[in-house]
Image 1 (cartoon, rainbow, N blue to C red):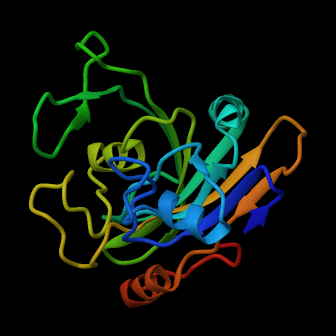
Image 2 (tube, one colour):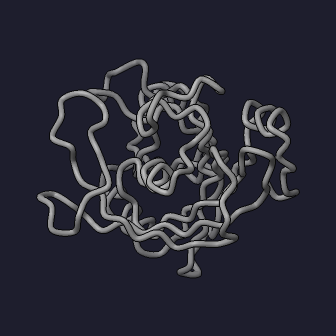
Length: 219
């Protein structure tokens, strides 16, 4: 999507981890991108392997911290999510802390009480974009960036992702992967580049059509 020699932005495919157990893990997007460009890159943030969409890399390790800070404090990260159930709200702000489960097997994260050990505040803003008989398309804007935040907050509300295998009682088999796409990063600081937008991928477009969801033009 973008490459100025210092910052490289991709529309990440699903099924590929952003980073591996080490920098030489051939399964990771970080490794494959480094090989393709012929120079080392570092991921500024993470997306789950099954989550598609906008992801930012840098070509110098010294750029990781400033770009991570820019993403954390001066950017809106917007996801598109196809979920179970039809929300009664049009818009909603969710404030629900996230903490570790302490388990060695999934799930590793859960909705926690504020005073729980390791709990960190987490805020998401939700907006319903389309409704069908039993499903909905939501825009999820992450105010904070906790691990699995969008997945956990939606499941917490009773609107787990279609395809959710972890944060739903009984894994969902309606889609091969969870229906979550990192749609856009929009910066509020006036710097350039000011935004990156990745359209909803073909598999989620087909899923939306099958479920009867009318996609907005800007998806």
